[in-house]
Length: 76
Image 1 (cartoon, rainbow, N blue to C red):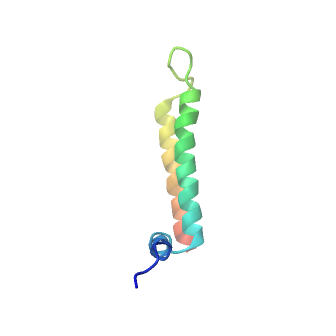
Image 2 (spheres, one colour):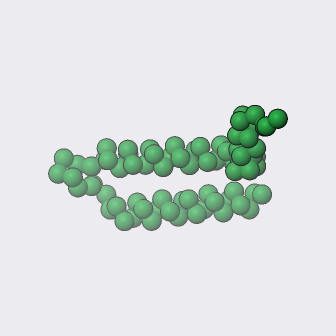
Image 3 (cartoon, helix red, strand yellow):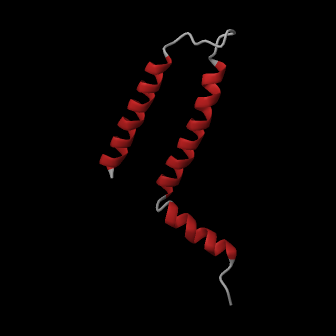
């Protein structure tokens, strides 16, 4: 007899996310990624400009992600 499809799915999940913490991090990352696009669009002025320097925002965002990644990496 073959393996039940739900068992195969569980095996794949465990391969992708070895711990519950890694699954939570993935879900949070996806939620933040989606919210970022929405927040950027909502922050546009009526003439489609921004009241802030977009290059600086991207630089600060990437630096924050690097810092968070390093903290998580060093914690393990």
